Image 1 (cartoon, helix red, strand yellow):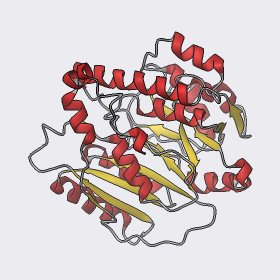
Image 2: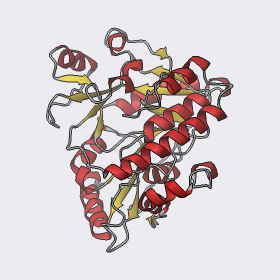
Image 3: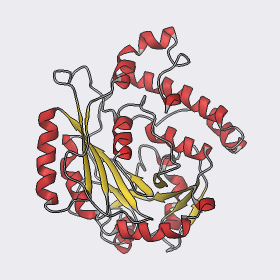
Length: 337
């Protein structure tokens, strides 16, 4: 994790002068109230925890996710003390006597709403990670809902991959989104997904904003097969994946908000030698929402950080990553979505 903190290579005088607010925000270590709700469950030797983070604006989608995922959950909730308590109260009502959900409150300092203005997404992801205990984890964002029954399907797929020589597999969970936002039309089966996809109701996630970010999943093949299949990592692939908890890297906490965090993480998985395999009978659905505006200066700061981090990862893993991929990334001038 030390390599994912701020160091002298990043803090050049020009970068520090331009990005001091961004740097200070991403350095902030927010106080955490671990396991704010009682959590006690039996862990199977092969099991998967859903890792999720949310603020109060996503609470409705979060509650739908909890109703669709029956397995263990570790979630980090971000907000003021009052907002966190409100989210906790709503979740308590929804969960009733269910105790396999660990909730960790990450408190935004009182009176600092304008100063701490960017969502510390990777800090929250790591918080959820440290609150998990199973052999595998699935990290998704709070604006996604997994299909009902996905927990048992994923768990069943993991058993053949528990041998040490088969542990470096990232299981891709295909992501779709509605052409229009709705929580009432969520498909329950793959057949429903296929029908909605054919009728243009569902589309590949990020199809308009960044199609290349999910193209390697190969949605045409996905909708025609019931067998798991391997795909090659290509820049700038950023799938949602199930990973073995003991070997997965932590998230780089310097990245804030929605910008670059999954692309950089996926590149690191490629560098660490993970193979990518698509699960054909599980999916997640993105629920549309208004895009969060980001100050242009901080977009530039994130781009610069992403540029430096990408070059560092390419150098670190140059003996692992396909030289053609390295050339492709550099030829693309490392343009981010």
